[in-house]
Image (tube, rainbow, N blue to C red; front, side, top):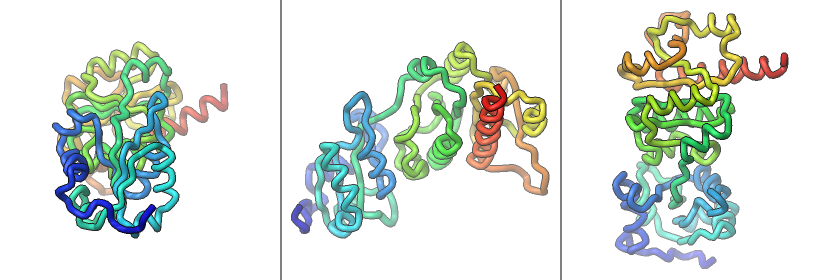
Length: 280
Protein backbone atom coordinates (compact mmCIF):
# COMPACT_ATOMS: atom_id res chain seq x y z
CA UNK A 1 0.00 0.00 0.00
CA UNK A 2 1.41 3.42 -0.99
CA UNK A 3 1.28 5.80 1.94
CA UNK A 4 -0.15 8.76 0.01
CA UNK A 5 -3.80 9.72 -0.40
CA UNK A 6 -5.53 8.01 -3.30
CA UNK A 7 -8.70 10.06 -3.08
CA UNK A 8 -7.60 13.68 -3.14
CA UNK A 9 -10.93 15.34 -3.82
CA UNK A 10 -14.23 15.00 -1.96
CA UNK A 11 -15.80 15.27 -5.45
CA UNK A 12 -14.66 11.72 -6.30
CA UNK A 13 -17.53 9.48 -7.38
CA UNK A 14 -16.56 6.90 -4.73
CA UNK A 15 -16.67 9.57 -2.04
CA UNK A 16 -20.02 10.86 -3.31
CA UNK A 17 -21.48 7.34 -3.20
CA UNK A 18 -20.35 6.89 0.39
CA UNK A 19 -21.40 10.38 1.47
CA UNK A 20 -24.99 9.90 0.41
CA UNK A 21 -25.35 6.95 2.80
CA UNK A 22 -25.79 9.53 5.54
CA UNK A 23 -29.38 9.80 4.30
CA UNK A 24 -31.92 7.08 4.97
CA UNK A 25 -33.47 7.00 1.50
CA UNK A 26 -30.09 6.29 -0.09
CA UNK A 27 -29.24 3.67 2.54
CA UNK A 28 -32.51 1.92 1.79
CA UNK A 29 -32.00 2.14 -1.97
CA UNK A 30 -28.41 0.87 -1.89
CA UNK A 31 -28.87 -1.44 1.11
CA UNK A 32 -25.60 -0.06 2.46
CA UNK A 33 -24.69 1.88 5.59
CA UNK A 34 -21.67 3.56 7.18
CA UNK A 35 -19.65 2.23 10.11
CA UNK A 36 -17.23 4.76 11.58
CA UNK A 37 -14.25 4.35 13.88
CA UNK A 38 -11.86 1.48 14.56
CA UNK A 39 -14.16 -0.65 16.73
CA UNK A 40 -17.09 -0.65 14.30
CA UNK A 41 -14.87 -1.19 11.25
CA UNK A 42 -12.97 -4.02 12.96
CA UNK A 43 -16.24 -5.79 13.73
CA UNK A 44 -17.54 -5.20 10.21
CA UNK A 45 -14.37 -6.63 8.65
CA UNK A 46 -14.86 -9.88 10.55
CA UNK A 47 -18.59 -10.17 9.83
CA UNK A 48 -20.45 -11.87 7.02
CA UNK A 49 -24.03 -12.83 6.17
CA UNK A 50 -24.55 -16.19 4.47
CA UNK A 51 -20.89 -16.22 3.53
CA UNK A 52 -20.96 -12.74 1.99
CA UNK A 53 -18.61 -10.23 3.67
CA UNK A 54 -20.40 -7.30 5.28
CA UNK A 55 -17.65 -4.73 4.74
CA UNK A 56 -17.44 -3.75 1.07
CA UNK A 57 -15.35 -0.58 1.18
CA UNK A 58 -13.00 1.21 3.59
CA UNK A 59 -11.82 4.80 3.55
CA UNK A 60 -8.82 5.54 5.78
CA UNK A 61 -6.44 8.41 6.34
CA UNK A 62 -2.75 7.56 6.05
CA UNK A 63 -2.34 8.06 9.80
CA UNK A 64 -5.29 5.79 10.62
CA UNK A 65 -4.09 3.14 8.18
CA UNK A 66 -0.72 3.08 9.91
CA UNK A 67 -2.21 3.08 13.42
CA UNK A 68 -4.80 0.43 12.65
CA UNK A 69 -2.85 -1.71 10.21
CA UNK A 70 -4.54 -4.86 11.50
CA UNK A 71 -7.95 -3.46 10.58
CA UNK A 72 -6.81 -2.46 7.09
CA UNK A 73 -5.36 -5.94 6.62
CA UNK A 74 -8.61 -7.53 7.80
CA UNK A 75 -10.53 -5.36 5.34
CA UNK A 76 -8.25 -6.52 2.52
CA UNK A 77 -8.76 -10.15 3.52
CA UNK A 78 -12.53 -9.61 3.56
CA UNK A 79 -12.33 -8.46 -0.04
CA UNK A 80 -13.22 -4.84 0.69
CA UNK A 81 -11.93 -2.04 -1.52
CA UNK A 82 -9.51 -0.01 0.59
CA UNK A 83 -8.88 3.65 -0.21
CA UNK A 84 -6.31 5.90 1.38
CA UNK A 85 -7.79 9.38 1.67
CA UNK A 86 -6.85 12.77 3.04
CA UNK A 87 -8.61 14.15 6.10
CA UNK A 88 -10.89 16.35 3.99
CA UNK A 89 -12.31 13.28 2.27
CA UNK A 90 -12.92 11.46 5.56
CA UNK A 91 -14.54 14.57 7.03
CA UNK A 92 -16.80 14.79 3.98
CA UNK A 93 -18.00 11.20 4.34
CA UNK A 94 -18.15 11.10 8.13
CA UNK A 95 -21.23 12.10 10.11
CA UNK A 96 -19.22 12.92 13.25
CA UNK A 97 -17.68 16.22 14.33
CA UNK A 98 -14.29 14.61 15.03
CA UNK A 99 -13.78 11.64 12.65
CA UNK A 100 -11.39 8.89 13.74
CA UNK A 101 -9.93 8.35 10.29
CA UNK A 102 -11.77 5.13 9.35
CA UNK A 103 -15.12 4.91 7.59
CA UNK A 104 -16.48 1.61 6.32
CA UNK A 105 -19.28 0.99 3.84
CA UNK A 106 -21.25 -2.09 4.90
CA UNK A 107 -24.04 -4.24 3.54
CA UNK A 108 -27.31 -4.37 5.44
CA UNK A 109 -27.25 -7.20 7.95
CA UNK A 110 -30.73 -7.38 9.49
CA UNK A 111 -32.21 -10.82 10.05
CA UNK A 112 -35.73 -11.94 8.99
CA UNK A 113 -38.02 -12.05 12.02
CA UNK A 114 -39.06 -15.62 11.16
CA UNK A 115 -35.43 -16.71 11.39
CA UNK A 116 -35.16 -15.23 14.88
CA UNK A 117 -38.28 -17.11 15.97
CA UNK A 118 -37.01 -20.36 14.47
CA UNK A 119 -33.89 -20.11 16.65
CA UNK A 120 -36.05 -20.33 19.82
CA UNK A 121 -34.68 -17.22 21.53
CA UNK A 122 -34.61 -16.99 25.32
CA UNK A 123 -33.89 -13.29 25.73
CA UNK A 124 -35.04 -10.62 23.28
CA UNK A 125 -35.20 -6.83 23.34
CA UNK A 126 -38.11 -5.35 21.37
CA UNK A 127 -37.79 -1.64 20.59
CA UNK A 128 -41.31 -0.34 20.06
CA UNK A 129 -41.76 3.37 19.29
CA UNK A 130 -38.08 4.13 20.02
CA UNK A 131 -37.35 7.18 17.89
CA UNK A 132 -33.97 8.36 19.15
CA UNK A 133 -31.14 6.65 17.23
CA UNK A 134 -28.67 7.04 20.09
CA UNK A 135 -31.07 5.25 22.44
CA UNK A 136 -31.68 2.48 19.92
CA UNK A 137 -27.97 1.87 19.45
CA UNK A 138 -27.29 1.92 23.17
CA UNK A 139 -30.10 -0.55 23.91
CA UNK A 140 -28.68 -2.80 21.19
CA UNK A 141 -25.30 -2.59 22.93
CA UNK A 142 -26.93 -3.41 26.29
CA UNK A 143 -28.73 -6.41 24.77
CA UNK A 144 -25.46 -7.64 23.32
CA UNK A 145 -23.64 -7.22 26.64
CA UNK A 146 -26.39 -9.02 28.55
CA UNK A 147 -26.20 -11.99 26.21
CA UNK A 148 -29.57 -11.49 24.50
CA UNK A 149 -30.34 -13.70 21.54
CA UNK A 150 -31.88 -11.02 19.34
CA UNK A 151 -33.23 -7.49 19.04
CA UNK A 152 -36.40 -6.52 17.20
CA UNK A 153 -37.09 -2.97 15.97
CA UNK A 154 -40.75 -2.38 15.20
CA UNK A 155 -41.94 -0.42 12.20
CA UNK A 156 -42.58 2.56 14.51
CA UNK A 157 -38.95 2.72 15.62
CA UNK A 158 -35.88 4.47 14.29
CA UNK A 159 -33.74 3.22 11.39
CA UNK A 160 -31.27 0.56 12.58
CA UNK A 161 -28.65 1.98 10.22
CA UNK A 162 -28.87 5.62 11.27
CA UNK A 163 -25.23 6.71 11.80
CA UNK A 164 -25.96 7.74 15.40
CA UNK A 165 -27.42 4.32 16.12
CA UNK A 166 -24.43 2.56 14.57
CA UNK A 167 -22.00 4.68 16.61
CA UNK A 168 -23.93 4.19 19.84
CA UNK A 169 -23.89 0.40 19.46
CA UNK A 170 -20.05 0.44 19.33
CA UNK A 171 -19.92 -2.62 17.10
CA UNK A 172 -22.87 -4.52 18.55
CA UNK A 173 -24.72 -4.23 15.22
CA UNK A 174 -22.41 -7.04 14.09
CA UNK A 175 -22.85 -9.32 17.11
CA UNK A 176 -26.46 -10.47 17.32
CA UNK A 177 -29.48 -10.91 15.04
CA UNK A 178 -31.65 -7.82 14.58
CA UNK A 179 -35.01 -7.79 12.83
CA UNK A 180 -36.37 -4.48 11.55
CA UNK A 181 -39.72 -3.07 10.49
CA UNK A 182 -41.81 -5.63 12.35
CA UNK A 183 -45.28 -4.38 13.42
CA UNK A 184 -45.47 -4.53 17.21
CA UNK A 185 -48.48 -6.86 17.23
CA UNK A 186 -46.73 -9.25 14.86
CA UNK A 187 -43.60 -9.14 17.02
CA UNK A 188 -45.52 -9.92 20.18
CA UNK A 189 -47.67 -12.65 18.71
CA UNK A 190 -44.71 -14.27 16.98
CA UNK A 191 -42.66 -14.33 20.16
CA UNK A 192 -45.57 -15.65 22.20
CA UNK A 193 -46.01 -18.40 19.64
CA UNK A 194 -42.35 -19.29 20.15
CA UNK A 195 -42.96 -19.73 23.88
CA UNK A 196 -41.53 -16.37 24.95
CA UNK A 197 -43.11 -14.36 27.79
CA UNK A 198 -43.71 -10.72 26.86
CA UNK A 199 -42.78 -8.17 29.51
CA UNK A 200 -43.37 -4.47 28.86
CA UNK A 201 -41.01 -2.09 30.68
CA UNK A 202 -42.93 0.93 31.92
CA UNK A 203 -42.34 3.31 34.81
CA UNK A 204 -46.02 3.12 35.70
CA UNK A 205 -46.19 -0.67 35.53
CA UNK A 206 -48.26 -2.58 38.07
CA UNK A 207 -45.50 -5.08 38.76
CA UNK A 208 -42.15 -4.34 40.38
CA UNK A 209 -38.99 -5.87 38.88
CA UNK A 210 -37.67 -6.83 42.31
CA UNK A 211 -40.92 -8.62 43.13
CA UNK A 212 -40.86 -10.44 39.77
CA UNK A 213 -37.35 -11.68 40.51
CA UNK A 214 -38.37 -12.78 44.00
CA UNK A 215 -41.35 -14.68 42.59
CA UNK A 216 -39.13 -16.49 40.10
CA UNK A 217 -41.06 -15.36 37.03
CA UNK A 218 -38.04 -14.11 35.11
CA UNK A 219 -36.19 -17.40 34.59
CA UNK A 220 -37.93 -18.46 31.40
CA UNK A 221 -37.72 -17.17 27.84
CA UNK A 222 -38.47 -13.44 27.97
CA UNK A 223 -38.89 -10.56 25.55
CA UNK A 224 -38.65 -7.07 27.03
CA UNK A 225 -40.63 -4.40 25.17
CA UNK A 226 -39.15 -0.91 25.49
CA UNK A 227 -40.91 2.27 24.40
CA UNK A 228 -40.22 5.90 23.73
CA UNK A 229 -38.20 7.59 26.48
CA UNK A 230 -40.43 10.68 26.55
CA UNK A 231 -43.87 9.08 26.70
CA UNK A 232 -43.30 5.37 27.30
CA UNK A 233 -45.45 2.68 25.73
CA UNK A 234 -48.95 3.31 24.35
CA UNK A 235 -51.80 1.63 26.21
CA UNK A 236 -52.49 -0.67 23.27
CA UNK A 237 -48.91 -1.92 23.31
CA UNK A 238 -48.92 -2.48 27.08
CA UNK A 239 -52.14 -4.46 26.67
CA UNK A 240 -50.33 -6.95 24.44
CA UNK A 241 -47.85 -7.88 27.17
CA UNK A 242 -48.10 -10.70 29.69
CA UNK A 243 -46.85 -8.30 32.38
CA UNK A 244 -46.06 -4.59 32.66
CA UNK A 245 -43.05 -4.17 34.92
CA UNK A 246 -41.43 -1.09 36.41
CA UNK A 247 -37.84 -0.74 37.57
CA UNK A 248 -38.07 0.33 41.23
CA UNK A 249 -36.73 3.77 42.11
CA UNK A 250 -35.32 3.55 45.62
CA UNK A 251 -33.77 7.02 45.69
CA UNK A 252 -35.01 10.45 44.70
CA UNK A 253 -34.44 10.22 40.95
CA UNK A 254 -37.55 10.99 38.94
CA UNK A 255 -36.90 8.17 36.50
CA UNK A 256 -34.27 6.24 34.54
CA UNK A 257 -33.45 6.94 30.91
CA UNK A 258 -34.36 4.29 28.38
CA UNK A 259 -30.92 2.73 27.95
CA UNK A 260 -30.29 2.50 31.70
CA UNK A 261 -33.68 0.91 32.33
CA UNK A 262 -33.08 -1.52 29.46
CA UNK A 263 -29.72 -2.54 30.91
CA UNK A 264 -31.27 -3.19 34.33
CA UNK A 265 -34.11 -5.25 32.86
CA UNK A 266 -32.00 -7.30 30.46
CA UNK A 267 -29.35 -8.10 33.05
CA UNK A 268 -32.03 -9.06 35.58
CA UNK A 269 -33.49 -11.54 33.09
CA UNK A 270 -30.07 -12.86 32.10
CA UNK A 271 -29.17 -13.53 35.73
CA UNK A 272 -32.51 -15.18 36.46
CA UNK A 273 -32.18 -17.39 33.39
CA UNK A 274 -28.68 -18.50 34.31
CA UNK A 275 -29.83 -19.33 37.82
CA UNK A 276 -32.82 -21.26 36.46
CA UNK A 277 -30.58 -23.22 34.09
CA UNK A 278 -28.19 -24.08 36.90
CA UNK A 279 -31.02 -25.42 39.03
CA UNK A 280 -32.55 -27.49 36.23
